[in-house]
Image (cartoon, rainbow, N blue to C red; front, side, top):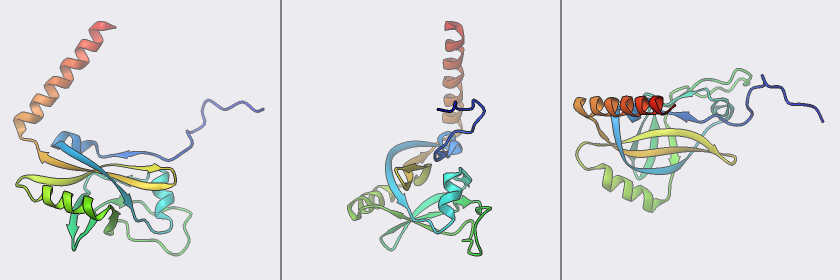
Length: 156
């Protein structure tokens, strides 16, 4: 049996996270939704060529939609290439959609995609019900993170 190269890239799908969302929002509740992709978009997401930083979720006509998800076109794709920032439908049960809609209508709450990943062979998006942080909350979070980092350094 051949040895594995230490320099080889890890196989498997990439997990794309929205790091900015964790800094900007408090996550109150999270749901897992399927993502409808077209053609070569699946390979681009699998390769980790997507950006969640500007993306947001809205409920329109009883359906959940993901806006501004930027999926880079797959380099080896044929003639058909979907638009990079097209609206993409999210797949959830009807009861979950009603629950999300009812909770998201509260003042100051938003639906934010936090993670894009594969579960088996299916593309999934983690959608969080989020409340915006105020400036003092952001400073407090940074202060706590720095204190934790210092404590870990002192233990080592």
